[in-house]
Structures are given as structure tokens and as C-alpha cells.
Image (cartoon, rainbow, N blue to C red; front, side):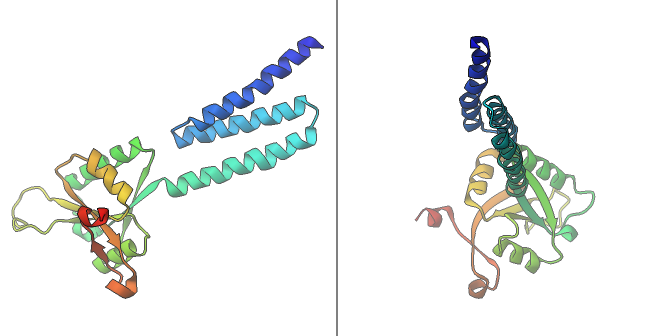
Length: 203
């Protein structure tokens, strides 16, 4: 009897240990795995203690449902949507490809994905930014030397302040310049965005 109690104590002790590991987990994908492990251990504890009906409820509702919803939330929220105009980017443009690679590298450090969305016109692109469909837009810079054969420069406009802070800190590439904007209601500024300086935002 005492030998059986020892195994029960060990299994039950895994619950707070797994819970602590889940709370301290930084990577959301690892946290998803830890949540599944926590649910499995909780189910096992209920079975060992003779509560088979509670164990079934925990496995189907508590664990399976929670992991499924959490997985959907991760896939839908941990992403940066970047809007572009495909006609402004030549197929042979290697600098833009390098820029996207740099974006992905920076976002990967924060467990984010990059999703590139194409829009047919500049107005549609700005409307998507104003309506919060996308988090940023990337367009070629209009420079006086546009007719030269030098490499193309891009300007990235970001509407989420935290994303702008991350890119401003981590993105050190010459292919693009960054700016932060606060989106405005369509009836006030025609569905376009209004640039906001860092000083104005702090005020």
C-alpha cells in the first residue's frame, strides 16, 4: 500500500512542476506543448485517484479544447502582415528579397511570422492599413536618383507601435527606412493614414 502511495505522490508532484514550466515558458509553441503535457498529467492523476469521469472530461474538454483554441490563437495572432504593390517590385529585384529575409529574421526572434499580401492599387493598400487589415506597407522610395542604376530603396510604414520599436531596434539593413503612423478613421482622412512622429506619439 505504501509503495502504491509513493507512485501517486510522484505523479501528483508532477502537476505543480509542469505548471511552473508552463508559466515560465517564453516560446508560445513550446508553451502549447507544455499545456498538452499538463493536461495529460492531470488526466493521469484523476485516473489514479479513481475519478475516471473527471479524467475523461479533462482530456476532452480541458486539454483537447484548450490546446486547439490556443493553437488557433497562435497561428492567427503571431503574424505581421505586410502589404505591397507587386507592380512596383520587379521580379528580378534581389534587394526586396533580401529585405523580406531580414524582416523574417527579426520577427523570428519574437516568434512571429511574416505574411506578405499584394494589393492592386496604392489607395487599396492605404485603405487596408487604415482599416487594420495589415500591420505595415512597403513601397519603393521616390528619390531624385530614381533613374539611376543604383539599388532600389524601400520605405516601410508600420501602424503598430510595438512592431515599429522592434524593427527600429533590430532591423539594421540599408534596403529600407522605417516610419510609424497612427491610422485614422476613414471619414476623417479618407481612409488613408496620417504619419505620426515619435515625439508626437510620446506627447
